[in-house]
Image (cartoon, rainbow, N blue to C red; front, side):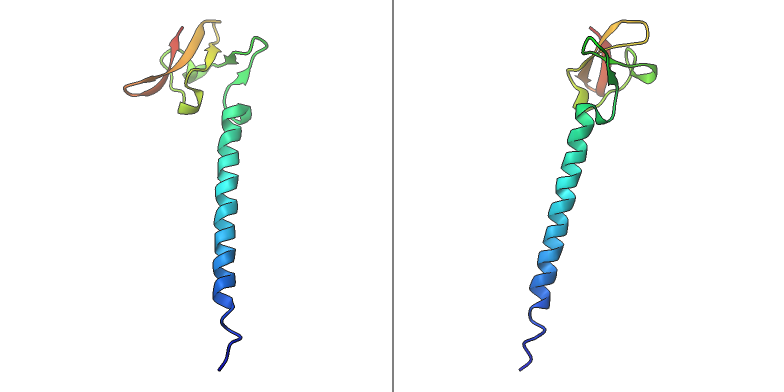
Length: 92
């Protein structure tokens, strides 16, 4: 009997499992970094995000930003809130 080929399947399955685990970990870390300033409005010295353009009153924001405070280009205070149609910046 030839036994030398039996180890290929478990090794291949382990390699695939490891690749999936690494991919999931990287995806979670990238997503987590985006919510902590990796992508999105830059913080101002006061701690509120400075937003402009479409992120003004009524503009869209993401679930990661829900509850975040910001100011628009005119200095008005905004907060990202969940609405029936998604997440929107609203005057606070």
